[in-house]
Image 1 (spheres, one colour):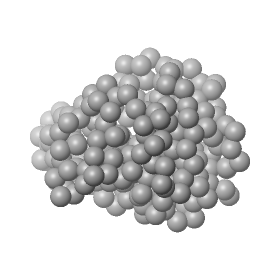
Image 2 (image 1 turned 135 degrees about the vertical axis):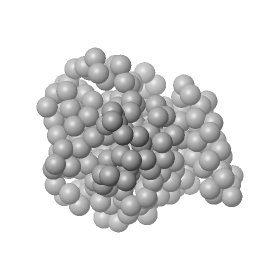
Image 3 (image 1 turned 90 degrees about the vertical axis):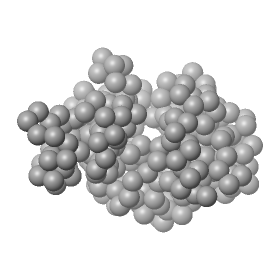
Image 4 (image 1 turned 90 degrees about the horizontal axis):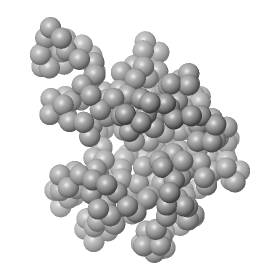
Length: 243
């Protein structure tokens, strides 16, 4: 099975201006993500899908393919599908450009599983993360398929507090990590055929489109947490961890 990694890299971002070009140790965020993806074994190609000549220029020395995509594409997955539709790969891994601390070994896990759609999550142990709407939560069924993703506090602890919940249940609260694996035909259906449901519009979470239309999303546990760069605080934290 031929597989590739496609990294969607839109220049404009609403919460942190030009975040993918912000530098850590004189290297832009997007380059950190690319370097981790290049370490993944058994992947045929690493590709960046961007709407920015600046991002393309920043990555010119890396052994990757870079495709220019329209700025008006609404989501990272739409950007990935725009490129993937014309490529000869059976399995596509979508690694968000703002995930510079993603583990190559965890990316590799996705291509080793048989699933239409697959993603990663990591246990939340900090109540501040649980409350934070920028940290997306996911609840699983008994087969480790996603029941729902939300920016809200799910599952909600009604009769106990956060610490009791963490101590009583094994991994009761999971943080979703922004990476997906798709069979190519499922990715193209997702991007070009499925309507956008109201839950996707409300939460601003594109993965809810798949759940709404009846697709299963397999969720694997990541070996470590990541720092997705959404805010200035995220950027500062990543800088501190890489001093």
